[in-house]
Image (cartoon, rainbow, N blue to C red):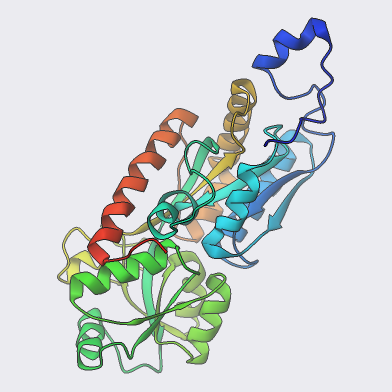
Length: 325
C-alpha cells in the first residue's frame, strides 16, 4: 500500500485536479527531499548521489539529503522507495544492479524494477576495471586465467553483495574463460577495495572512479576495462574484448527513480531539473574526472532502456550459469 500523500489537502472541488497533479504547491520546500542510495558511503553510487543532491538542492532552493540504506545488492533501498509516496520527496539513485541485474539473481525480489518505480532520468554510465593488488604475481588477464585454471576455485573475487552487476559480470567472464573462482560478497565497493588493498581477496571488478585513486597510488594493478572502448582515464589499459573475449561489455549505469505512479507533471519537472544538474559544467567535470559519461533522456526513453537492460542481464546470468536464489 502506498502511503497517503500528506502534503495535499483535497477538497471536493479540486479532487479532479488531484488526479493529474499529485504534488502540492509547497513542493519542494515542505520537508527535505531524500535521495536513497542502496550502498555504503564512499562508493560510486553514494558519491554521485551527493553531487546530485547538492546540484538539485541549489536549483530548487530546497534541502536535499542522501540516505544510505545498504544491503542485498541495493535491493533493500529499492524496496523501500518502491513502497513510498510519489510526492517528490523520496527519490532513489538506482543502478544497473538494483534495476537490471536484480531480477536475474534474486528469486524473491519484492519489487518489479519497471512497474514499481517512476523512471525519471539516467545520470551516467561508467566502465568497470578488473584490478588486483600490486603485490599479486598476476600481471595480465591471460595470467589471471592461467592461474585460475591451475588452481580451480582458489582465487577469490569481491562482489558488492549478492545480485550486483560487478559480481555477475565477473561470473560471466569466468564462464567465458572456463575458470572457477570464489565470490566473496561485500556491502559495497569501499569495504571490498579495503580488503583487496589489504590482500584479503585476489581481484575485483570495480567502477573506474573508485579504483582510480588506488591505481594512481600504486596499490592496485589494472588488468582490463569492461567497456568496448578503452577508458579515457586509463588509456593504457586494454579492454577485456581486446584480450581475446570479443564483444564482452559490462558497464555500470546510474539513474534517478521515484516511487510508482508519480504525477506526470512532477516527473517532467524533476527530469528537467535533474537534466540541468547532470549536464551542468560542475557535474560534467566531476563525472569526467571519474571516468563517467553524463547521460540524460526522457522518462519514457529511460524506462525503455531499463527494460532492455533487464533482458540483457538475464541472458548474461544464463550464460554464467547463475540461477536466482
